[in-house]
Image (cartoon, rainbow, N blue to C red; front, top):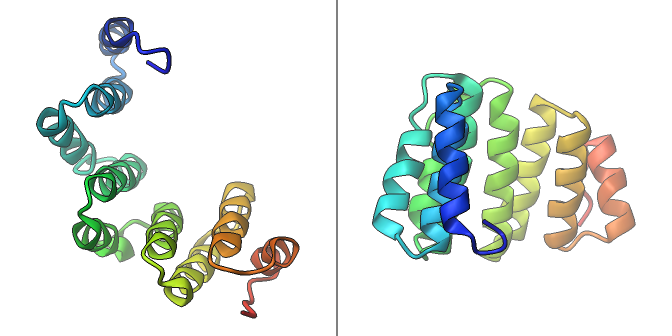
Length: 158
């Protein structure tokens, strides 16, 4: 898909479906359709991904759908989607909060971004969350070296 071979990406999605990897196939098709300009159809895939019964997949689907909405200029809707049901996602909420932090940073809400990052780290502070938190804190205006220290320690100093 990166090389613009959408037909090859569609075939690969079909192969994923044959091996019962429907979620991955749907995520790929959503990205393919979005990239190709098929926004309405892409949105249906993104929405379906966000409604997965699997907790982790639903969290990932919500994050993807929110990014899609933000790319389309619907920042408020993306924020509402990320915030909705976050308490029900368990550890998957950490990734959603990092996605919310990115959206808040983009909207210029740096303090809200910092709060979302710290909340994510309270839920889960694995390597992925620490790196993502450091990146988002840097984007929100924290000195780069300090951002990763802050992420690791869980405190924010503007």
